[in-house]
Length: 283
Image (cartoon, rainbow, N blue to C red; front, side, top):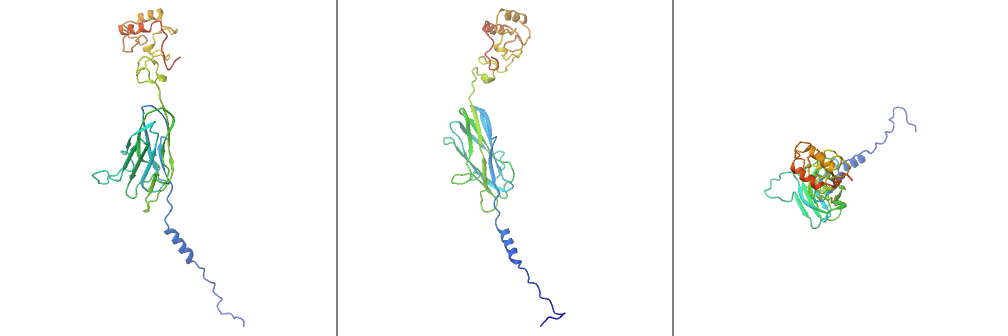
């Protein structure tokens, strides 16, 4: 029997929309994966001299996440470096917990015999957030020469590893990368003890901390009485010295005290019949 006009057309079936909505709600309820964070030592490279203090800044890059704690495990060669101090004065994690004694935070542990250190700092929620948030400054002393030594941050994973804890209420470690520091430690000589290394000293065997070199020939006044620059201190230079005696001629003022006098004459005699120098700046 045919349907006549006036009868309602069959209604289309409703689409099932509740399931996708429930799935979306469930996904939103799941905790988001922590963004990868990094611990870095800067400068990442540098040249130093034996006896120098080497200051490295330990920082955390939170990659936009809120970080409430950083636990850095450091290793170094104890034959080359000694860790003298871990300075938190300018740390981004500086916080007064109202404690009369140092408690768990911050923790600074130095083992120079084993070449290891640990820095553990924390802040209440929401913590810190930034690209280069300072954790601490590590002050090393260069003990011995090395063509290449590293100060390393132990990476995440495994026992005794470094960690960066995000503010998610679950203690999630977000540390994904570390940047170590590579150092070159040189052992330059200072034969005359004037504080200027031989390769930079214009008189390597006679102390002259001021490095005065009036004629600019690479030989300091203190070891250069060759006033006519012919390569030898002789009678010609003695005649030139006499002309400047008791004057303020800076060229003939061998000890650079502002006056050419008997002291300079005594120094001239010690340089007589010698070549100027030796110098680390001239042949």
